[in-house]
Length: 320
Image 1 (tube, rainbow, N blue to C red):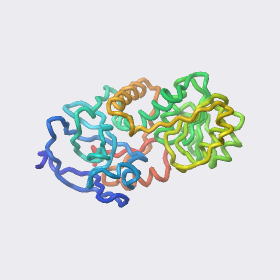
Image 2: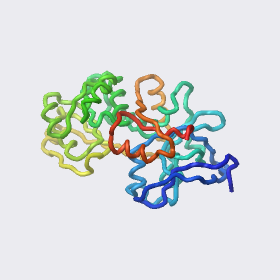
Image 3: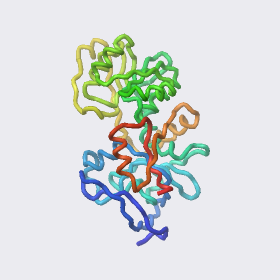
Image 4: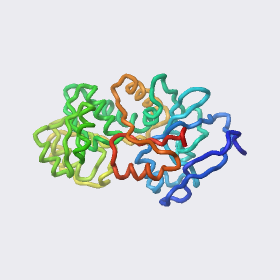
């Protein structure tokens, strides 16, 4: 059954581990419990790469449309789409039109930039959880943010700074130092865990935010002040590493983890609402580094994997 909206364009995954492709297809009529959303923009996340490779949601239906979050228009309102298995157990957001359960939608307040709102389901909620819920950052803290120029990392920096904490932001590129300073952080250029330890060993952070894993996590434990916390939300450097256990227990330190895909739908919705409030109040900052069309999604994924630009990469679906 065709949709009556004309030809649809979508990024489709046919075989796990094989490159997806853009396709033109019709879209089925939405069920009574669903909304047909006209997409405006969608964020590019490492999670999308893991899904395409079959590392996550490998039991999902094939072929399916990729994309775990985005922003679109429904009944004249700007809405965020996130959760509900988008891109994993059902068709996702990298499409001109998508049918989604109505309870997956969160209305975007007037005045919020659509591209920034498109990043709230993953980057926004993750930043909120690791800074507020797990890190419990306040104005007495020294916060070390690893991988600080990423889409989540840069939002983490802005939130921790807004809390009044002293924020130290690690990057591998000196060219990104000015960007980190603009978010309120003191940048540290360190290309390896050893280099980071040598530069930061006197700083004694009370909270370390870690999306890198591998040896970076172990150095984070070494750097922590007594009673400190490490909050891990990714392992982009290495999913395995060694922890100096004596440092861990002698300091009374805690290692906490956040995995957003395990949160129930209502908690995801609540997190998006809270993240939008922080974005609207200016406490969370989202930097859009580059925008690509749907047809150029492969370039967007390459850009993400090379980590060339700070902040978020967006698919500009409205202009595709």
